[in-house]
Amino acid sequence: MRLYLRIKISYRCFNFQKICLNLCMTNTANITPANHLIYPNSTRGVFEIELKAPSELILSNNIGEIILQKNYPKGRLTIDISNFSSGIYLLKILREGRSEMVKIRKE
Image (tube, rainbow, N blue to C red; front, side):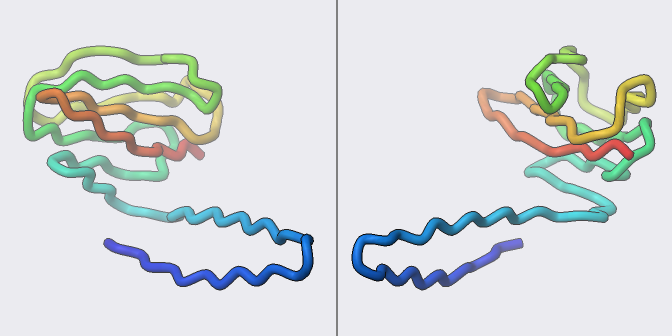
């Protein structure tokens, strides 16, 4: 999915206007970064990942604390974060020298 934005900023004398854009996707059923399928997203605690290649997964909370870091083989795996509080978690997928980040929303 590609999103194109056209923004026009006008300046009046020396008063500058600041523009803040916050783009987010909500109620996303499936997220497919490059070669992985992650579902459901958002979750109540348990979500699945289908890895197309052996990968290292690093899951961190919204303040950057790592709560899971492990190497996994190719295939389907289930991750349970039901013991953690609601919020946004970042899942980093490392494989073959590449890195992908996915936001996981826990209700």
